[in-house]
Image 1: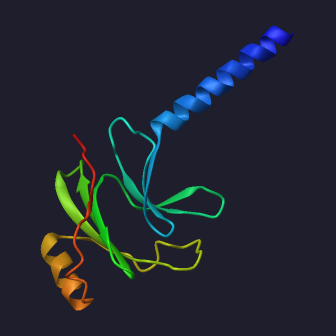
Image 2 (image 1 turned 60 degrees about the horizontal axis):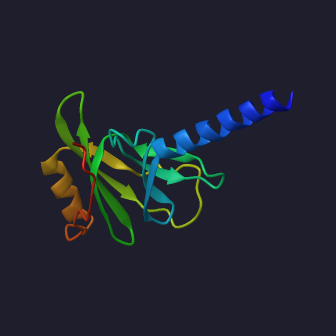
Image 3 (image 1 turned 60 degrees about the vertical axis):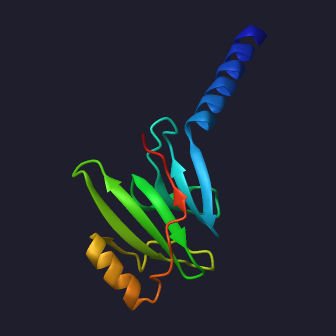
Length: 134
């Protein structure tokens, strides 16, 4: 009986280590993260980390670059389905929220992205964090 419990425990530990090795989490600012369940392919999404530790996706994969200031996060997304680039502007919530996706602007084309950045007076915010997707 102890041998069976020992084997179950060893399998559970191995599974936990495997799951930990397969995820990737990089803090952007506040409760915003680049997160991937597949650390091998680096298919990152921009997420908001809830109080219970779960991640809520707000910009879908594959996010290839982000930048931010005190009010906004900008994100560049490569869409593997259409092989195109899309852009997002995410207002930063400074208090805990269950709806971080509210107010997101995007997906935008490059031209629309640059116009909206000028309107919001954030055209000086540059992409500073890059994800190698190769």
